[in-house]
Length: 219
Image (cartoon, rainbow, N blue to C red):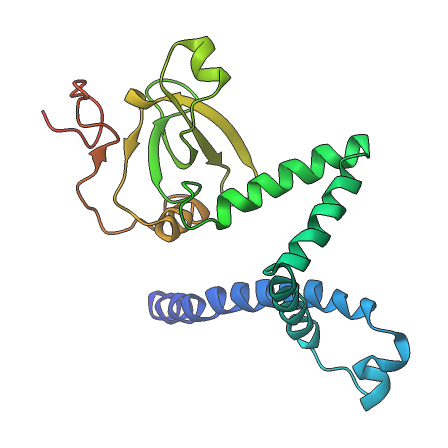
């Protein structure tokens, strides 16, 4: 039994990650293949060729995004986008959703943005319990003015599905910045702590912290 278990586990270590990867890729390809619905039915690949080719929707999606980027990169394209946004701004519910989504996209995809660039260690959901979080912003807003504290915005993902989580504003002195990359942080979260990145010396977000009991701080 020990001999059988040893090789069974070795086989699972090969097939389980491969199976999960294929499953996720398959879901993404199917989702992106939905863009083929934009093509008139008579010109869809399955009707022209007589059979379906998985992944054509991925190519079409990338092509649409690329062409859109080329169009809006000039003055005429920006003018069209401005007219479109002014139209959406007149629709009560849509303008709130579109405005928030646009600000989120600009923050995340901006090279100078701070969203999801740092992995943090914070006490959550109560003192004495630590979890990983991702910094999403440090801009001074009404929350900082009303609380009188220098708080930063962080996202605390759930595990093993990091797409759901909590938005928390944490005082800067209560945050420890880790050296691990965002990819390593996601791996640790999705594995529920089973996968731990190579340990490196973590440093506080600010060098003037004095609470020596916090992880990653020098005494």
